[in-house]
Amino acid sequence: MQKQISQLANTITKLSEQIATLSARPIPAAATAAPRVVPALPQQRQKPPTTTKPPPGPAPTYAQVAEKQPREFTEVRGKKRARKEMILLKAYPTADRLIIFSLTAAPNDHKEAPDRALQEPNKTITTHADIEHLPLILANITATNNIIFTVAPQHLSTSYEPYLAILEEALH
Image (cartoon, rainbow, N blue to C red; front, side, top):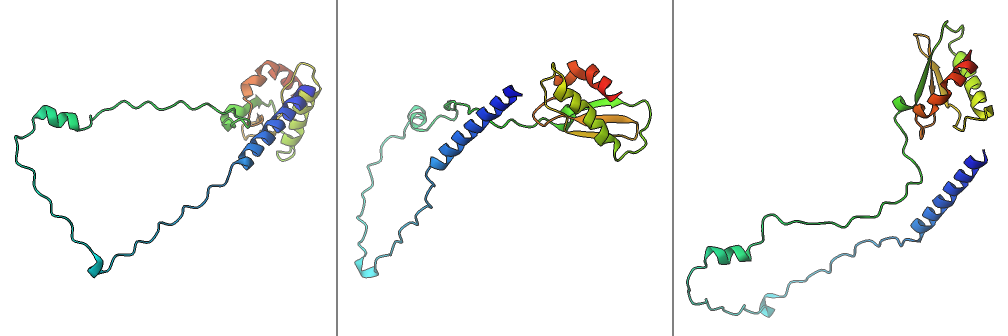
């Protein structure tokens, strides 16, 4: 329990640091409007200077033209960005968080039976010295007499495999 409390305290500290850095950032100002250009009056406009054409010369060669044009394929290497530490972990899909037990007989009351069935494994998880996982969060009984337990979103049901015999004994 102390280990979980210290982990939660570390997480809260990191989150508060992250909030402090985000709140310290300046808020970007809105883009300023471009200045209006007022056209000059017709009498104020100047005539463009006349240009003289360059004397005709020999046509450029293919090599000269190819040198001036950019290459079609250029290799661009971007900078690798440093990965930020994820404080809040992503949730696993529900299918990876299910623990399924088969019941030998159908329960009398399908509405109250999942809640009562959830209490026993959770009491075992919290009181057993070897189990350091979080309690189960949800129970459901299917039409085929299976009881399905769901673990917390940031955990996989495979981490509970070593304790399935203990949990099954608690259900009986």
